[in-house]
Image (cartoon, rainbow, N blue to C red; front, top):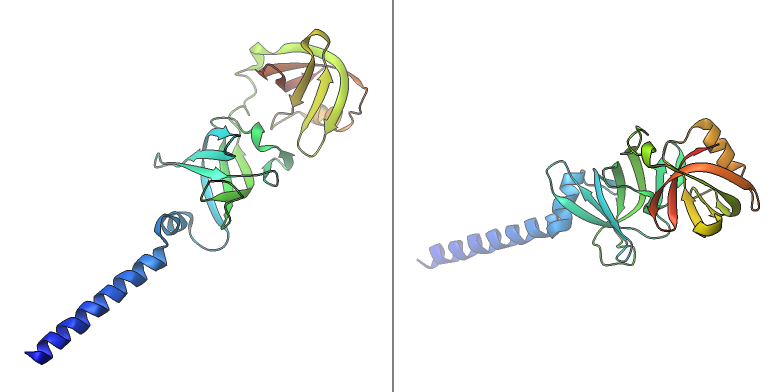
Length: 204
């Protein structure tokens, strides 16, 4: 009986150690997400943008299984589409993206942080669904940020307007934007995103 009890205790202890080892190897939710992303140091998450929360600095991505995950970002995070860099605020609901995840939390409350987001397909890449709402804007350029793809214009009665470049500008629009300098007078069509921010449709 003593031998049987000892054997039973050893078996129970071995089972407990095995269970603990399994839990530690999965790493909780992070391990589950890691297995979904394929694991490794360069984890990736593909999904559809559901929104960007600038207060908590999170991008919400919906996976193909319907699950939505919040991914942290900061000022160092790059958004790239067709070899052009944009700010995270340029992301639109419906964009198809792939985010590269790192093990840090980016200084916010998110458990996952991305330093690089590649836009695989822009929701506005067809260019035709919002062109009807475009308005004519003109004024003098105040500031140009080539890296993040935006410039500001003193648009008269409309005040100072921030103009963001679309993901897929024409070659002429891209060249015009890259040649902009403070003080230049510009005329263009754009659609309003907010009271003080628009997205370029076309220079003219």
